[in-house]
Image (cartoon, rainbow, N blue to C red; front, side, top):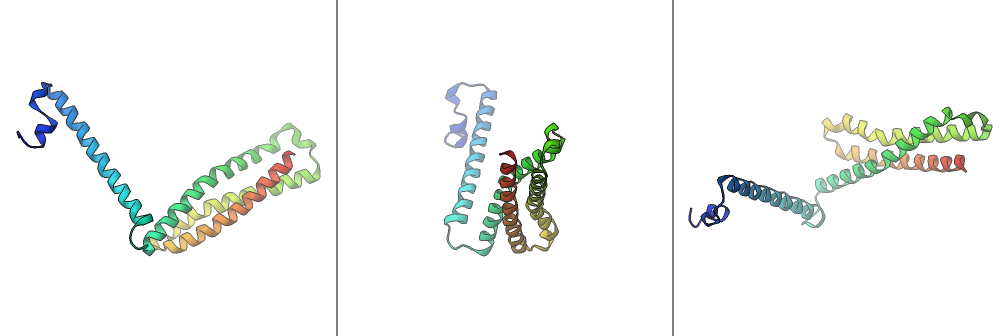
Length: 165
């Protein structure tokens, strides 16, 4: 292949060993695969956000991805708060709290538990409805659960701050 691709990858004038040529070919293959992946990602981005016509399926895909991202952000926070609240009764000072503080603690704990359940519920809904290919219902119900979970999380955060101060 004097004038072909092989002469570019393995020029005979370089005077390298066959192992070097194999490594260079491997690097070239990795570069080509990376380039293909980059082009595919760019094409998907253009189709999703700037392409011609926004089809219902594309919009549904974006809504589902955005909901998943929001849940990925909110769920760890509520889980940490819930874990912290579960350890509070075992602290030595918990026996000295007033009746109001104890009631506020239990209300905060319940709000956190309900928030956690609301954030986990879209997973169960997805599992139950996935085989029916009813993505619209999954998105709408996940949106409702996410809003309810955020309301309860807000109440739990306010309760936790009130307990601390």
